Picture 1 (cartoon, helix red, strand yellow):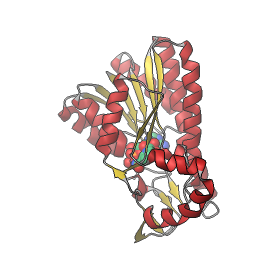
Picture 2 (picture 1 turned 180 degrees about the vertical axis):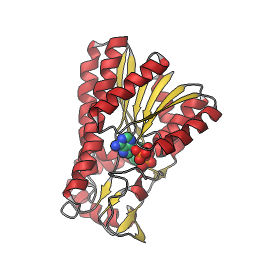
Picture 3 (picture 1 turned 90 degrees about the vertical axis):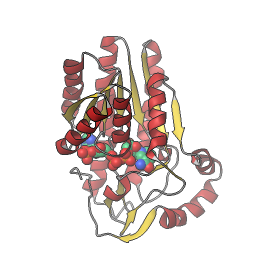
Amino acid sequence: MIVVVTGASSGIGRAAALALAARGDTVVLAGRSRTSLDRIATECREAGGDAVVAPTDVSDREQVEVLVDLAVARCGRVDVLLHCAAVMAYGEFTQVPPEVFERVLRVDIDGTVNVARSALRRFTAQGEGHLILVGSVVGKMAPPFMSSYVMSKWAIHGLARALQAEVRALPGVDVSLLAPGSIDTPVYERAGNYIGRIGQPPPPVSDVDKVTQAILSLTTRPRRELSVGLANPLMVFGFRHLPAVYDALVVTLMKRLGLSRTPTEPTPGNVFEPH
Ligand SMILES: NC(=O)c1ccc[n+]([C@@H]2O[C@H](COP(=O)([O-])OP(=O)(O)OC[C@H]3O[C@@H](n4cnc5c(N)ncnc54)[C@H](OP(=O)(O)O)[C@@H]3O)[C@@H](O)[C@H]2O)c1
């Protein structure tokens, strides 16, 4: 398969790119940092697949169009576009600088819109293709102190469901939504931070391999939504059906379990620039 992976330089995107390459796929690796992508490309080739490096800022519509055009020029087509790229910022809503908040929305929401549009135009032209959007369990619930990220994930879940209805008119074209819970990746440490303590994945934490297996299975069998994380259904149930209990507990739980004890100065983290 020819698979374009955004956010391929770290965490879930990196692990998925390596697993796809090991399966013999050709991966087109997108992210902002060419240095990181070059390193992952070497690892993908060593794993057994071919790799194309395509530095791209997904918040820029033209760059995303160039990414898909490059993939088609180099590989002839795109079978799957796996969209993992995202950034995050911790802090109470009023403490996060407006430009940081807005940039999270630009990368996470506009980036997803740009990727979805370019992918679906390409899939329509070639008569087939599969867009996999990485949402999150927080696209179905609303923990505090990460409101720009939560907003973005709700937007991604809404977009995915709307697109799934639209592509029913296009046999051969699919849209899947992946909704991981806590996964052990660098996103927590690299996030923008205006809350004073470095973030951490709240338990129960899944290994990134679990998400990789889910992605590999999605590439051969599209699904409306695939959740990864044993506690996801319980948390979403609590949020939806016991809102008063959820609200009473979530701030304390987030402070105890979602933030480490390691202090940090206010920082935009990797929101504007790659790590
Ligand atoms: N880790 C979790 O617990 C978890 C849970 C649920 C959902 N998710 C979702 O899973 C996806 C991957 O997260 P992760 O944990 O693997 O995060 P990560 O390790 O921080 O990786 C994020 C990736 O996005 C890229 N990126 C950031 N801004 C970009 C931009 N403007 N344009 C292009 N690429 C950009 C980064 O590369 P550069 O910095 O080089 O651009 C990096 O490759 C995200 O959608 C995240 O929301 C993660």
